[in-house]
Image (tube, rainbow, N blue to C red):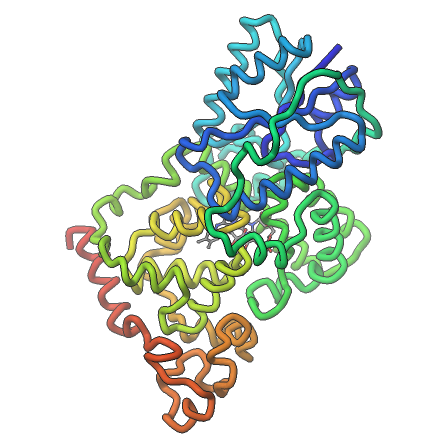
Length: 476
Ligand code: FAD
């Protein structure tokens, strides 16, 4: 029998249950259907670059096993039905999808296949825990992270990853659309080169990234994870997002590390918690389909954002706010498609609270520029920083970008790397160059307002303005 395996964000061959089941059964037709570019939250520009590279990698890996990947454009359901007719496939298999519109599309696909007399088989695999299996004692979904994480940690351990098939039997006949037809080229011409020098995409690179982190990073994770100047985190996020590695592979690798008695237990636990934030975000999205668009806390619906401050938004996007840690983060994002988590929190807080620009505008910029842009994690994190999400940081807690810089980039290595115009400034002034004496600025070759901006807004003023806006939104 012939089975169609529909790939989506599971661009790997190891720990891929749909592929393994299809291979065990007989002939395999691997398929990737391009997304509808008109859909809300269609891939952003950096994501298109990553996806193209990941598909190239998957194509090679599947071809080497004996069953080339077919790329097709067009309506997903029609495309799959047509391919089933072309190949005589009697079963279609895929991994469950959780974006609200895609979950709906998959339910429609199941119906359409049933009508055509074709079996549908859906596996879990994008998450460690299915959204409906992690519930409070009262049977409701969690809205607070800590008890959610405890429930996950005491739930049955996710099943161990399964091996990649050694060989695939293919079907002759069906032709693939060329990869170019999927139009995955980012709109910005400068990007592909920059992103390619920052990342190596694909399943083997994902595994290498994990192995490197297990050897070099995990044991110090608890201390180093908040330091953007150190390589203290795994950088697995884009690989996890595209499924070049599965969360089960990551989870079980950490459990094995733990069982071997390696590493400080608090670091291992801390890392597990971060992986569970990913789960929490997707569980929230499953529970609140409007999470990417609407504040969960309705009292934020009428927040007095300064919506038309285009100049401030642009200064933030380009890393020209005059606050070095903010600018370093935004430039890291622009240059590499990724930003350290601590700095994501700082720049998000700066946009929302210092510039009073709505979190949705920041979310949209991240969506377009992150290689790990992820509907669940991005939406949940922006709402968390804005203070309007589930279990959010309270709005009135406003990060001071100077103190954050001094604390988490104490030697200024991160700022110097991404804001080279400040590289010769003394450590003392690095996170607040406007306080440096004229002689220090001159020595470092800095002319504020000329080759590095003056602060776009004064911190004390911005803080008070943000608190006033919060009071206004509450009708106080
Ligand atoms: P590690 O620290 O090594 O963590 C391991 C994995 O756990 C990550 O790869 C990721 O899958 C998951 N993870 C860690 N922290 C979080 C978190 N806070 N929320 C959800 N999952 C987490 N992450 C994305 O994957 N995509 C996004 O679009 C995204 N947008 C964000 C927007 C904002 C405003 C903020 C504050 C955070 C956002 N994050 C997002 C979460 C986090 O910043 C990244 O997952 C992390 O920086 C990725 O780096 P890493 O793989 O080295 O993380």
